[in-house]
Image (cartoon, rainbow, N blue to C red; front, side):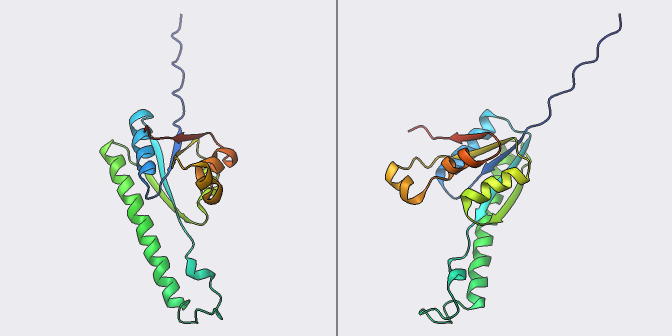
Length: 162
């Protein structure tokens, strides 16, 4: 009898952890690294739109407030903060032996995270939970709630034990 070939290994799951500057985001990343041992990991963050870019040229605040130079400066500062955030997260991954990819997009976090997960063909989206109360969720919205309903892939929401 001829020996049967071993079945092919399962394909590597591509996971994406959406990160921000919060402690719950950091906890979700650490939890995923400890418990899921991802081989393919994308660290994703959203750089918000510059609030100054919404000011019209004839704003009562004056044209100097919304000057193109100021908008460029604020946008560049936000880009640097986003890059520092993913660099720090990538270093944490390296400590766990994971060589993570990074991605930064500009936009509304809820929508941008879902769009990126689809565009990057992610198998699992991982988010931290801010554990906001119902009133805060009503006014601020919940990124994890939005993503769990709108992402086209499975979503894991990691909540820190209290």
